[in-house]
Length: 183
Image (cartoon, rainbow, N blue to C red; front, side, top):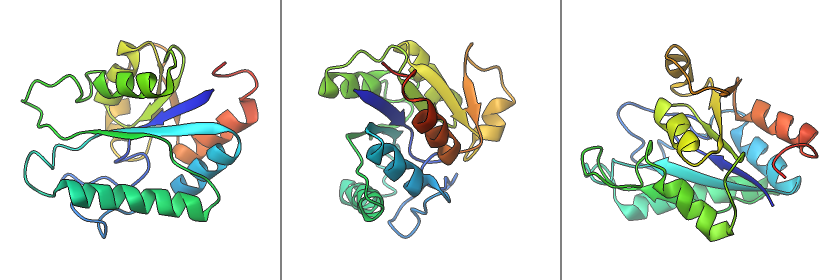
């Protein structure tokens, strides 16, 4: 199985320090929807692992989050692709859960769902927590320069972190080199 795991805010859609609180505020980064569809059509399973502490903070509810994810699925389907499992952490940063990145709980959930070992599987994110979660499960940390990527790049990164401009560049790399990557 060719599996790719993505963070959501800052990788697939624009991020906001004020949180993405509605479907109207959920705006795809240019090229991201097409990249997911291209990966899907090339045989990749694209899963999503996203911290959503706005739920714990009361900024939006689960129905709103589900509507954002339905919109993501709809846009990718319009391009001929599909999105795999979407897992989220609804907890705040001080709740001590094992799912909030940098903890690896969501990645382990994806591994269990697909019955795969995550060793070497690319996890694409824009934050230090994303990269640390990848390392915790022996996945390949991949940083994109969208979202908080530039800020993250200015800090020490885990050894072996791959860096790309955006999700479209990640997709191009994987599609063109999939024979030698990820199994």
